[in-house]
Image (cartoon, rainbow, N blue to C red):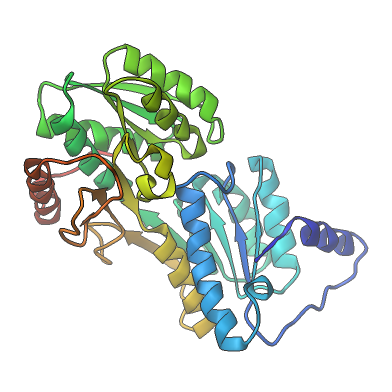
Length: 348
């Protein structure tokens, strides 16, 4: 796969000159616009990139080309870049589908997509009600609730923490689910909350985590992109302080912190992105809003990585080095069943 930056500038230059690109190829092409914070967050962006790469790899084998031929991607550093990048991708007329990662691409996509009615788009974590856009949504609060259950049961101080990237509805939903899960499992627990204010600042993430650890929290759940990598750093520095990861098994993606990460929320954005690409290439793609989660039409996409056994579709093994008592796993099974049958309604 190739970074899009140089190609994007070339396309924009040709557009300014009124020159068409005419780059039609005899194999599918995929465009991927990542969320700010970029690759290396060991969670959301990396997981999205994996889904696109997995799809591109299969396509490359089928057509006898390389992944670089199939997938172009870009890592914006500011939300102000989204509109011009979406335009550059779409105006090239090269891509079977353009996948936009992150809620904050919505405003730009609502402006850009109508200008290119024949171009297929997908967006993750927001809804854009247009006939050429597929909106991929996740019940993040379900994963957060399960993480809260584990934290509430495993805390020794009865104080746990939550570190979010920004105080926006998406992340507030994580916080509410986590807090509810912790108190459902342990009514005596107190939940401390901090927001970093950005997605790519692990230094500040570590500072805020230290504040919560010093205030008595012994487990902190991070939902802040690259910023919450700082939670793992702060946990490593302190005695008997632990962390919870987000979106992927972060004990696997950040193995140096596997001794402090108890578990991680599961958000299968990789499968969602891969599915959209495969459908676009196969000619079965349709627009609309698609929900992933325990309580959803699709019935999968959220859960928890914890312990050393794959228990069911929602509780999977982690590469954490921390022993998790059997009673915690049993409580998680009870929580999953409650969410599925509606006896537990998770706030968000």
